[in-house]
Length: 517
Image 1 (tube, one colour):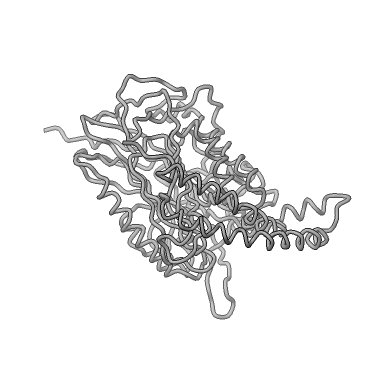
Image 2: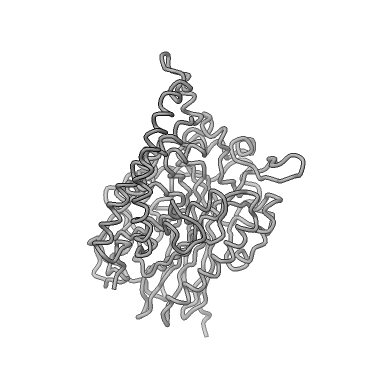
């Protein structure tokens, strides 16, 4: 039996939830407009460039009191509606699912046989309501959502360059192979009439020191023909719907609106979901979400947690070939190291239990991914507790040497919010060129931090804070498989559209050659 798409089993309850959300929307919109009165760096520059424009302070003085008055008038109705909305959340499954059927059918992955490549992308895209996004120096959430989705779709439709070979082509092909998966759905496919992929160039100059044994690249575009997208901070519901509309033709299975609302299951009121969003070309077999119960401060208002997904990527001689994806977004405040460490411990336990609960006898595990915005790096002195966590003994970080030491070519993934609109990093191409050199990385990437009694938080010169991760691990099973890292990517396609640099990982999974008797 396939996954139900709606988070509600009852249409009546779903209808009540829709009505409640519509009645709550005016208060939400007004509060968002009040918070959005603050300006981003680029908005200040645009205002200064206009010949005739009223001072921003005057606009705030006129609009601010009016918006505040309307918000206060809307509060009594919203409080009454909350009495209806809160009980409804007890009937809500903590995620929604979108399945877009396709006429293509899977080609069975036969083992022993050729290996198969899988491509993963993880990105924090900061799609918060406008008023909250501006705290990260970002604005126009709906416009950014459309641009980000178009960039991801372009990559999803791009054909694999011929020199990469592999087991897939650039056009949709219909096979007579049998269907598989919980939804009796089709496998990944590239779309017809695909535009050529943007050229990607491996890091130059200083990035060649400590050269990796696999291709490492800073690229101005997302990798072509991505299999799995793991996104964080997709909090805004309208932005999520834009992503759904644009991504669904190329990603047949999408898990979205992940998390709980209200007072259910966690220690405090949740007004925002987890922000997690997962798109897959492969059939989804099982989904589970857990909320972190130990969040504090402003982070406690969102239902950050772990999303675990089992996908089926093929079948071999009557056995399923499955993969596991674990996507998360950890606690943000830099000084709350122990909170993050406890969340990591819970996440590892939940991931292991999920796999034990949903494994079937004879399953062949192709990959096991742990990814997301972990909000700590491997260089900051204050992140030593997280750097030594057991997660890194269970999963492999291809960018890491050990606790406190990254490989020489590893790149920070958090932008400096004060310089993210500078001309040197304003487009994907210029950002790529800038980040290929140490001077650019030190200026435009947020540096590791250290808390001292005297100076508070102070930046330490470095290659930047790498807080976005894609980790992997191998499983033993009925078929012995070997995982090889083919490519690690730091992606600049979202220059000025997010304060994070997305990361990509390409794995090739192949059966281990057995020695001849």
